[in-house]
Length: 371
Image 1: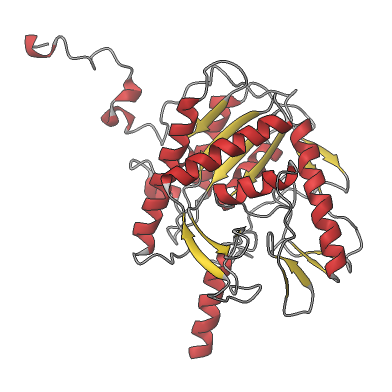
Image 2 (image 1 turned 60 degrees about the vertical axis):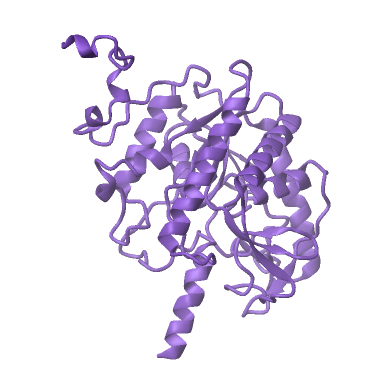
């Protein structure tokens, strides 16, 4: 080695610190086991978040780990409460894309905020809860309200029982109710409800907002269960569409960069001791330039099975120390069937369990009308 390089501070760093050393590793970014969180057969896991969070939930449920689940309906009568999309998370809260939506739910669960969800009728005359419109439908508003209260109680019960909570952040863009400030998982008028510019406003969260909402969410989770370990991760799935005055690609990178920085800031503020809050780099694994083309499906938005496998293999290495033979604990109604992708029956245009897809469905519907 030349004398000019002998004191370079990078000389003694491990291989993972050097970008070129990560080529030819089949997407492995050299994650090591997390010294603060080892998930084993004794743990009870719940999950929530964006569409990609469903892939994490499926992995946990099929990996031999214990995944807490409740069917989470006030009634098993299909006329009263009908399943409109498959159960994919620990509870039927649907997709929670934003930190504003997460903290809104946790405030309601903890009794800090009392909000009656907005209600709309669908094309079949059934009622939808606009906090989770794609999940269930009801034959009356009274049943919807009763189910909403049962849902909040079930969320609290599972949080109290769990030892690990995984949350996948997805978006910064959202629509809010002007009068109450509540946020929706799907834009009103895109499948459910009616859009009214005098009642609804587009909001793209700022860095300080997301940081504050993440902090408050962690505080509320700790209030409900002080022993709950928290794993935060970031969805690599691009936005379906943007309402900002930029391209969907630019909006995607703005959103993901802001969310990633917010997570880093919040995690860095927390103590290194005690019950952990940690980050898992699912976004970085999928966006790894050495294998990014393999990690996406042909539409370059959906994550391929290869990409999902890469994420989950490294999740296992990072956190999993063992696996139980009985992976699901069910409370309430029976546990769901394990979801398995079936390419023969899957549309390239629509994901039935992703509420953000309602925006694309609306666009396709308009395009068909024009034709």
